[in-house]
Structures are given as C-alpha cells and as structure tokens.
Image 1 (cartoon, rainbow, N blue to C red):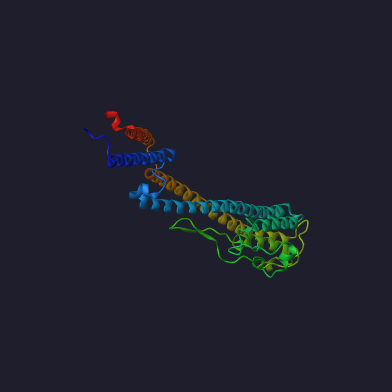
Image 2: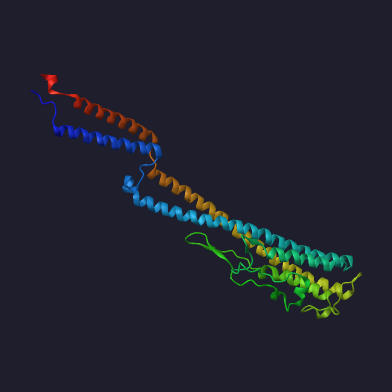
Length: 317
C-alpha cells in the first residue's frame, strides 16, 4: 500500500508555507512603501553606498539651509547699502543746488535729515542682530543720534563702535566667503561729509578747509567763502558716493555667488535623490506581480496542508 503521509513531509510543507508567508509579507511591504525593505539588511549589497550618499545629501542640505539664510541677509544688506548710496547722491545734489541758488536756507536741515537716515540704515538688524557691526552683533555700530553728538566728537571715526572683523560663511566643504560690511567702512565717508558741513555752519573750520575762513552759518545769499567751501566739498561727496556704491556692488557679487551656489547644491541634491531612489525604490509593476505570485503560492500551500490534515487511512480501507 502507498504511504499517505509522514511527519517529515508535513513539517516540510509547513516550512514551505511559512516561507511563502514571509515572502508575501516582504512583497506587501515593498508595494506599500515603495522601498526595497524597511531596513538596510534588505539592501545589504548597496548599504555602504546608500549610507555614504545619505551623508553627502544631508551635509549639502545643511549648507543649503545656511546659504538660504545668508541670501536673506544679503538682500537686507543690499537694501540698506542702496539707501546709503542714495543719501550720498542726495547730499551731493543738495550742495550743488545750494551753490546754484546762492542760498544756504534749509541746507543744515537737510544735513540733519541725511544723518538721521544714515544712522537708521547703519543700525539695520536681522533677527535682533546688527548687520554692520562686524562680530559685535549685539551692539549698535554707530553711537551718535544727533548733530550735537556728532559735533562733540573729535572725529567722525569716533562715532563707530563696530569691530574690524567682517563676517564670513562656509558655502560648502571647499569654499568660505567673507560677506560682512562694516558700518565704519561704508558709513564714515558720508558721515564725515555731513559733519564737515555742520561744522562749518557751527563756526568751526573742518580739517583742510582753512582757505575758506571764516566759518559760520550759511547765509542768503551765500558769502563767497561759503560758496568756495561748498564747491570744495563736491569732491568729498563724490568719495562718499563711490564708497557706498562700491559696497553695494560687492554685496551684489556676493548675492550672485550665493544664488549660484544654491542652484548647484539643489542640482546635487536632485542627483543624489535619484541615485538613492535607484537603490532604495522598487519597480512597482514587478513588486505587484511578485505580490500576486506570493498570494497564490501561500494560498496553494494552505490548501495542500488543509487537504493533508483531512486525510485518513480509513478513506482507503
């Protein structure tokens, strides 16, 4: 008589059923997550490459976050520097108009307005930190707030409290960019130009202006020495304009550098994402086909085990 079953055969069928069950679970996970597995064991062959790729991607993403913040800062700096350059232009135009009109009426008031605006721009902050203070970001980079304060100082340079350290930032593993602008560098020429006009009006001859004595309040009409003094200050105004525009242009270069850096880093992130996906992600069509195959195999295993469990020698007697 043919033997119906043995214990070892039953165990073999159960083992095969469990393997089919595990295979089905794996395929369900692949279809559900779109990934090759839920841990690195599933992709052991490419695990080191994947970990290295993730590390590079994470580091690049970190640089991008810092560079985006820097881009915001540079935009704010650009606005402030542009404003300072505009004040310098207006200052020179005020001198020219005063000479052309041969009247000093309103000139000092305009100087006060220019100074107030300049001080406000130099005290620009971002997240509570002063942009133009060097690394002393918690301290206002300019200490004067009125004409009296400015005239009481021994020089315009004494009005600045920023340090001499310009801020810099690492853009990637291989490049560091110095982007900081110091209040004293960009603001002192204009502040000094304003101070010289105020000094003269207050009766004090500015440095190098001895030929235009006596100093005194600008009159209407202007005295000859007053006209000559103001004409001489055109050159001082041009220096202030050149300084402000130069700082604005350099800041613009830094803005372009950061924008290009962010573009390159985004391209790198995109490439790394694709590379990672080729390792981690499954072919969905293939995974679905495997899932259906696994379901069929498990169902067949269960049916065979079920039929064997119902068999009896009595059926053959």
